[in-house]
Image 1 (cartoon, rainbow, N blue to C red):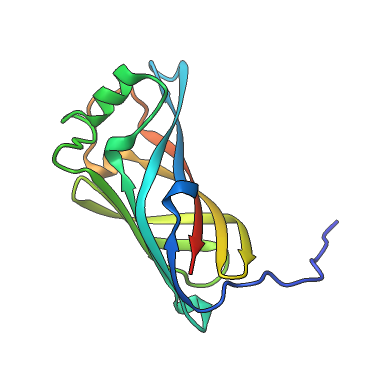
Image 2 (cartoon, rainbow, N blue to C red; image 1 turned 90 degrees about the horizontal axis):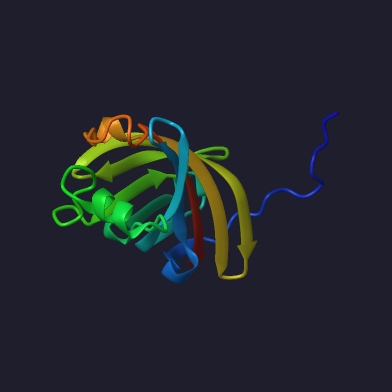
Length: 170
């Protein structure tokens, strides 16, 4: 059975929105120990902006993620993730996602990690619009090998499932 919503999804009004870093985050889920264990954690969002235009399909997004802020609830593991063999946050403290909005419920753009930029598509699952603000939740899967992060093969999984949750205000 298929149903259609009687109300169209509302788009945010045109303008430049700032990402509310206190209400935004990137969570991750992956495996470790040769796939036997699960790891979950969070990266804080450092800054970001969304330029909503009319038409909405021409809008753009830029979000900076604090790589050094990784928190998996295991300080020893987080220290290893920050180290030179993985994220090397001393030299590369920021992860950047930039995208155009386009059509439908996907965001296609680029992700830059350790100065390596690769295409990335996020699937938008929720969009809630309020006067002067909106919140969104999107997901994707990232292959760390594509960014040259190949240390600890087997101990740390190749793929990471990401969920991006942002609140943006005018």
